[in-house]
Image 1 (tube, rainbow, N blue to C red):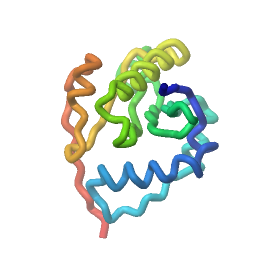
Image 2: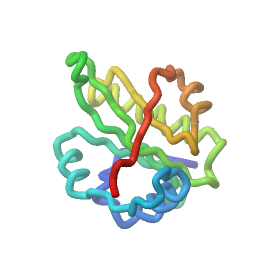
Image 3: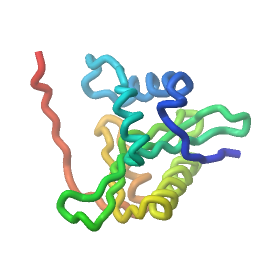
Length: 152
């Protein structure tokens, strides 16, 4: 049985790092970027109540997945509270089982009830899409996102 909860990502830094590495290896488009989470900024946003991290654990308590959101009022529609997905990952042994859907629904309900969220947004890498999951949860495809690396 899988359980879902809200946990501090910063407090579980050591535990989550191996999944972060797997996550980066699967989805990173610019794979020359070194994985280096800004733990101080995550803590700042967590402490301000503007970042919420959800976990999925199997029956023995092993972390198998997570989904995280930044929570802010919309700059365009200030009465609306947006939860913008920062991270989502589910260990490959647990995919295509309904766990991802359950985890996202748990997060959605929690965000609505505890933060007054009215809009959820998702970003996904084109090399690791989960559009079927998003559509199954009634998300609308709204925008395209383009990136361009301009560093050295």
